[in-house]
Amino acid sequence: MPAPQLPLFPTDPDMPPDPQLDEVRSAILAADPRGEKFGGALRRTFDMLLDGQHTGRFRWEQLHKTEKTHAGTLVEINLQRAFNFADGKKMDYSIEGADVDCKYSQELGKWMIPPEAMGHLCLGAWASDKAGLWSSGLFRVTEEVLTKKGGNRDGKRSLTAAARETAVHWLFRNEPLQDNILLRLSQGDIDAIFASRYGTQRLHELFRRTLGRVVSRSVVATVAQQDDYMKRVRYNGGSRSVLRPEGVVILGQYGNHQAVARALGLPVPGAGESVSVRLAPWTPDHADAPWTELEGDKWVVARDGDPVVEAPLLPER
Image (cartoon, rainbow, N blue to C red; front, top):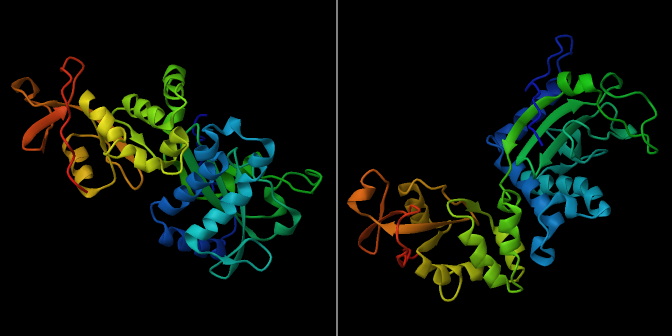
């Protein structure tokens, strides 16, 4: 799904000022200037719906129709938890004293607005796990911005095509959603990862096939399908132990692991994330390669031609 290109601010010069909308917008941005709370709430929504730990699902298309319908409710709940919004009097939230309705759609800007939201502010959200993007914006619900009366059987209407470009004050637009690495792998890789009936074996294969890429906690849960899934990543019999003879280390969220990732020029794993990488001992042939010191020796990211040697132990967290 390509990233929709829409203006950050409304483009209609005749739109009247809306001080209440400006106050709500400022409050949300003050609480979440980089969109981490908002994006995290949308990521949690997908993960809750897919429930990969118990179902092995990782694609939106694998959801049942009733589960997809429930997405909007989960977005509303997760945003309220993330921002600690108060309950609204008539709408979902009260933000800076304003009643604000919350709407989610899989198609950007095509939020379904109920009749009771007329005159109120609406916080619209969109996210696509496939595209790895999300957006959110505020708008005032008026007759001028909605499609003709009638709508669906509940009387809900959507923004007109023009209003999607001229009436929405975007908070965040086309921001990266925490990646679901399973959606980026080839079908051959997916088949190989899920070939085993054992979750531990599936995890080993996952980390073999995602070298140098961020793997989230939810992906680990989906592949392992076990209650103690993160334990399966560690040493003492987990993927770190099993892959060590293959030269592979699995970096986690710990500060000293992050330092290794930075030194080697790898993506830095955040909370609940992992990055696997095959290492090779430094030689003069690696003179221009970034390196890190582990167990008293210099190590670099292995190249295709480098021999496989047992990886060093990672530092204690």
